[in-house]
Image 1 (tube, rainbow, N blue to C red):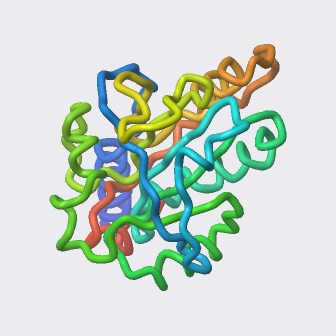
Image 2 (cartoon, rainbow, N blue to C red):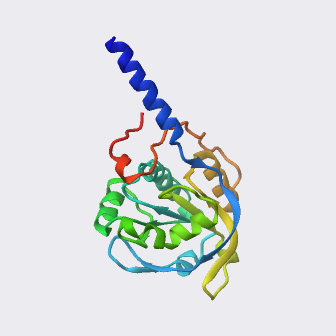
Image 3 (spheres, rainbow, N blue to C red):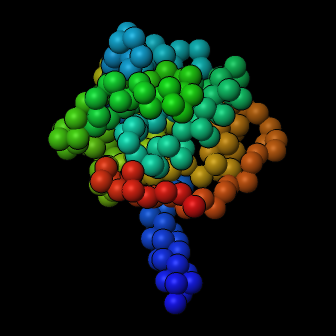
Length: 218
């Protein structure tokens, strides 16, 4: 009887985690994405996105909430891409949302993130007032919190002035599929296809503040 109970619990947990997988493809969308100047999570120095993009071939902006299990799933992969491709023209910059800056800084430190990170909001009550929320709703992201959410910029195509950086580009309304992400990065950097890692069938918990600490990846 005890074995049956344990088995049922494992099956339910597996089904829940399967249903909460939020990996999504890279898709091209119409979106007027505007330039920003935000403070760094570590140190507080301002970073201007247009200035950050100069001299790079591809910029990946990833929005995240530090308490989100989905972000914690993607972060090590992004750090690996940063270490592998930053000297080849890739720029990755994270935008923190919905938590105090101190929590964001602790999160980046725990995940060993070395690419730059800034913040837009500092409280979960600000969710519907952020540009992050506006952008992802416009691109069809129906998730409640939308962490992580990606937008890609091609620096050579960015206007030298004005608010809008692009009116059509590639986005991800969810977690990145690793093999697809690396293939996309290599193409945009002008590298050959090479050998990219296969996507892992990881089961990912939904990004809800009240669930993130309770659910554990198998």
